[in-house]
Image (cartoon, helix red, strand yellow):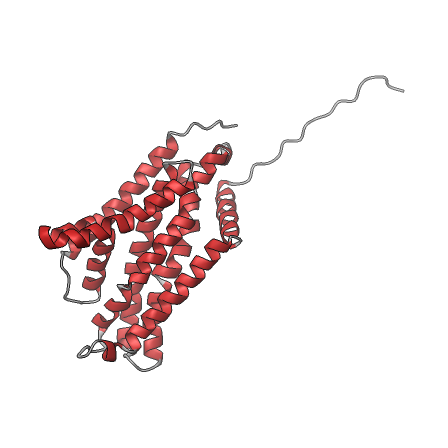
Length: 277
């Protein structure tokens, strides 16, 4: 009979692959948002109201806008629906404002990066949570509108398919801009309420003053408004001729703002101290 003490060997837990960790962040974030009543109500109500109002605008366009013809430029109206701005801003404030701020507040950010994922992986995962939800307002209604119009024989399938393709492009542009800005504002504070206020300031705080000041100062003031830049690009894409500003410069401004916001967010995340192990 041996009197020596037993020896134990600790079994090392295998680390999950980096891609699987990123997918886990996305899945966890989406599950959390779909369990929040506010996120569900805003997403569902926004997608429904924007889709219905856009379809109604197209189907009854000849009555609402006498002299208009159902060509490709006709779909610039639903793409310019003001309800898109309202619900996108509300969604970015309710969902996007807390994606990073909550992690900074609870120190969960340091836990995420204590395992082998990069700051870019983390930010891409957070963007993959917000972007699909925002696209339910910026892309889905604009795609359904020409589809319904074609099914009802209001426009030809050639025009409808062109409108669907352009809707995906302009909707994606607005989606990536809103996602990038929302993540930037969320990364600058530990309080989601401050980030949410910043989202409203960027959208309405620039659009409303631009509309007021455009009279005395001229149309170039609209370049300061992201929504008016989006409208200029949208109208040009669908062939509408009522642009007060140049669509090319508007596109450059939106893309530059999106890239700059993403870059600043990445630099901000790199500055946060993380204990790895």
